[in-house]
Length: 272
Ligand SMILES: [Zn+2]
Image (cartoon, rainbow, N blue to C red):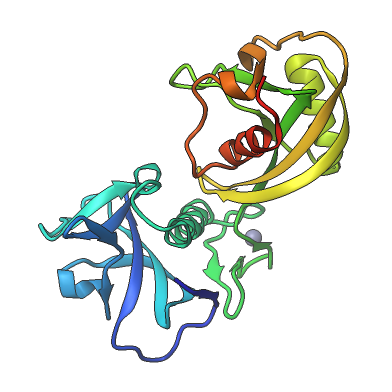
């Protein structure tokens, strides 16, 4: 799949991919076990009307749009609504990321109907992914909240923690949101100190991942243990332990950068 981002839609097209959300779920076509976004000129072909429509770019040469549907939209029997998390295991990464991109834009549209400064109704700015207040001129861009995520290693061990918000007894690397005025590296050191009380060194960039729940950008790092004893913040962490690669607990799914960090550790670390 090849996606080329864009802002201004073509004037005409016989078919387009529609990434349409209804009550935070994505509209999909399921045919012979294969899941895809509807490929039609307009969703009116399914008797569905759209509220807010944003051009995303082209996917394999077809225009792609994000759209918002009314909560009470009647879904035809040949279509389904699916949660974005459920999409993980069913589709290619590019497809998932584009669905996430559409969701972030739709979420931004829903939460920026009015100017945050003067309360006037906003308009969509032409040629730019922004909303404009016609009264005071304030521009509002899609919200992206950077968060760091870090794998801390100590020799042949990795620190994994169970967060208070985890629904299942899963262990993962540490993560936290970046604060205003903070560099990413400062955020990594602060989050680790706050959550588990450790000092770290050799903080290195690993990779990043958009995480559309609802609008995070996960920025991954690796770091080495430098000192201190585990002292957990009970508001955030239930348990944290050092693990060897051949004795890992339940860890996150393949799609997440958390899992990529843990897999990186396992691949580089000799067993035993
Ligand atoms: Zn305003």
